[in-house]
Image (cartoon, rainbow, N blue to C red):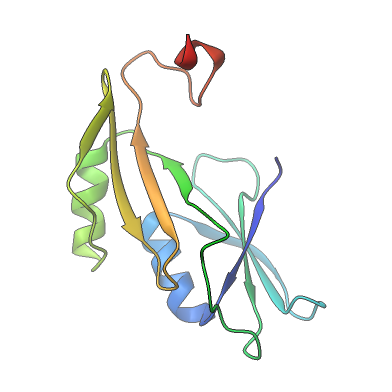
Length: 132
């Protein structure tokens, strides 16, 4: 997958949230059939992974089509503390699998984001080994 286009109601509010999460703006496309597009990437990612789509005439009315997004973190406790300092509340961490830790945050439009810290030595993403 190249990236996900996520419709947002207020671009500046959403940009503040996603910047707090660590995303940086790579570029913008101001006028498209979808609205304005703002391309974001995480610091260690070489490519855009999230596109914020904003059209004031089409605010977000329902986020139900997107179950959740997932962002991998190296140190979940540090990320939660950093987000709290920026006014973003995270749910208490859970351990859904051996050594795997997760927490949840919600963006300004109501999209749910799972923060995942893999156990030491785990590959950077899910693999068939996670389902063996």
